[in-house]
Length: 463
Image 1 (spheres, rainbow, N blue to C red):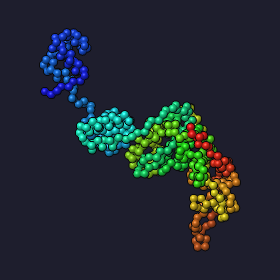
Image 2: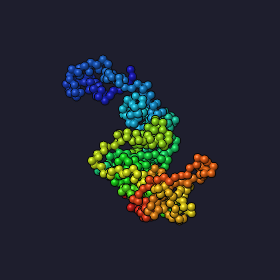
Image 3: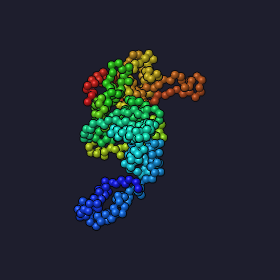
Image 4: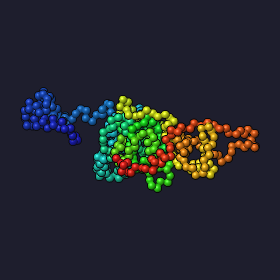
């Protein structure tokens, strides 16, 4: 018979009964020590004399529980994780298994199954990695399998340090943390996800994908916030990226993103506060950790590979994200100002560029020529050298502001579509009335240049 190994409680019973039998001890004292009756002590003595140490092995030892997973089911789960859900944390993976594969398993059980196969979560902590490395070293000393160790270590993914905590804001809309994350969200090329998240509730209020971290991306996020919720009190952003103060050698004013975005926020009455410390805006940084863990998987399973498809998918996914992770919104504690008129939003989220009228009474913009048109559809002529601002609104319309007046811009084609002399169906263009903003526009040259020429010092921008 092989060596019998007992559990701690069974070993204690064995030691007490063995001493009782061989030393003719007191049965009542043995019963008191084991916490049972004298009658049960007699049963244990009888079993010990018949079977010895093996009599104290529990009857269920070595038996597989009825509700436990079979080896085949465990193998299927490991295969699914390696081939389909390799980039998910264990909690998310258990949700996806139930949703897509009809496999209901708790995160704890899933963790044990995968750990038995030396598979770590992408969110594994340093201590967990340390324990796994120690186990691998012991295994290598016993088996000498360097190949197995290399395969196991390849599955260990480093995680970021946790950010420091601070109290949430008291009111919904009091402070929106805004940032962008460049990541391999979908397809083969990295993209930048722009996000605005409410500090009070943790609700994502706007999200937009673009190829890089751009003014367009932040304008689209701000457009979503304005149209759905209204005007917030403050944005808390990163001053190391597109929100930097105006650089001295900036090639052109339209590339000075801080001036453009800051001027739009100034017209809406939104304060901008920036910081170079990631932990200071920990709400949005923590949201990106969760999104980087979950969103690429959801995009991959949905078969999304383009920016346009990804931005459409965000509309439904952000609702799902907020339902799972955000706190309930208390509209009674909201400091959002009512949504502006859509036309005001469109005209405010604009890119302003300085241009000069040329000798042909036209404006050159983005390698094309434009003529200035008034509200009646008639061209307005300005002499050469007159300066003004080209306004590219959020929907892509072009306007020109000079001498406190605003005009529409019509592109001048390189060639006429039809000839008056050779086309029988030629009809001259008739003036068309234009919907041009009133004099109460936010693009007066002196106002904009006052804002652009007096950027805040970096110390004033940093919290």
